[in-house]
Length: 80
Image (cartoon, rainbow, N blue to C red):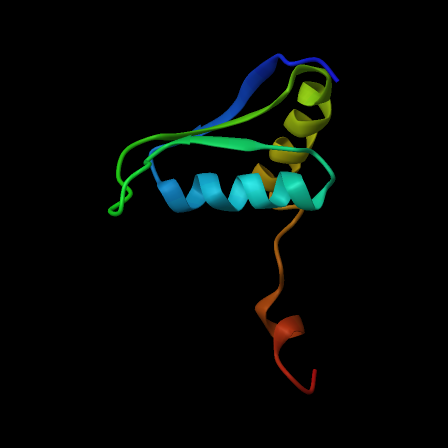
């Protein structure tokens, strides 16, 4: 892997950045989060990935934004 990283996601909400970083990492893509780095996270956050994994990361982000990773609350209820 090269040392170059590219920004693939940004959000005004720090929690959204944390969730996107976690999803990318779950898919095997190393991700780095920049921004909102204080005890009281505020402001925009940015997710970066290695340049050679940019296309794969963007496909995952687009799938998430289309709702393909959504979880049906009924399916998650115990006993269902």
